[in-house]
Image 1 (cartoon, rainbow, N blue to C red):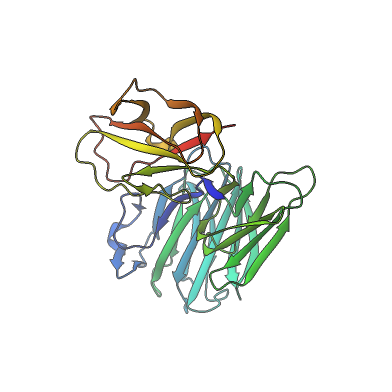
Image 2: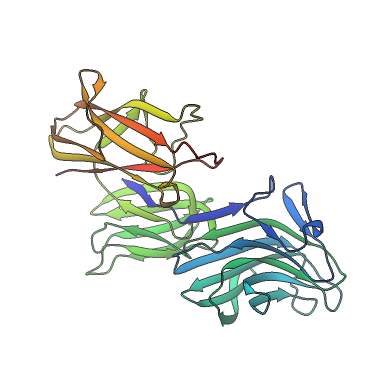
Length: 348
């Protein structure tokens, strides 16, 4: 089976509401409309910026917009910002416009930024600059002209989706949502996986892996920087009779108490005995300061001692083992974003 090892998504906004992440240079020139945010012209130029994520050597900023300038001096597009005197701009103007619909992309490698525009279903390279930036976003310049309507802004950890833990000569195919083949790769000798460039930062489609005659597929929404691993473990984790999602997040709803405790089931769905099983909790790096995930063995229906993992010497075929999970949240955490974690399983 294939499962998501790492999500590439950092930020995605389709403007159903105004998120607190945004910083505005001229707040009065930014207005939320149905499914879009509109930037109007101002004397000093209108910017809408995000803080650049730390410790990301590779990053993709992709923007979908509706913008067709008709006047000289009316320019809009991407901005990579460090200070008022130090920034990179990738702007569309009346001379470069390809219509009323625009899609722009900035790709970061270290301090280098490469700029692209989507033209005729392909990304066309335009320019490169170097900047140790701290903010990224969109800008509209000129004192008058048409507004800039932004319909989506996405930030991801790269251009590629990775598929790993494969044998040489395995075949990996990316298809779009209609079943058309986008790319096919064969794992070379000496390698354990491939990287496939996504056509868009957010791409709905399917990945198919053929390894030694066996076929595994995942149909989902992929994000640049996603990493999927091929695994054949028959172990599954259930909560209240429902298997946890191996590909994406399992939504457990709202927890009104600060600490939450629940019993989970680890099921060996094969006929084979498995040995030296370990279940370990790991958290999304942004949540480490706000929550702690600990596990305990089941002791006659009650949790034993909580720690970072639980271990079982053996789980026989079709056998179920109960264990406990506890979520402890910081008393001073009042955030609205979901807290995320995953459970990793290893065994012989």
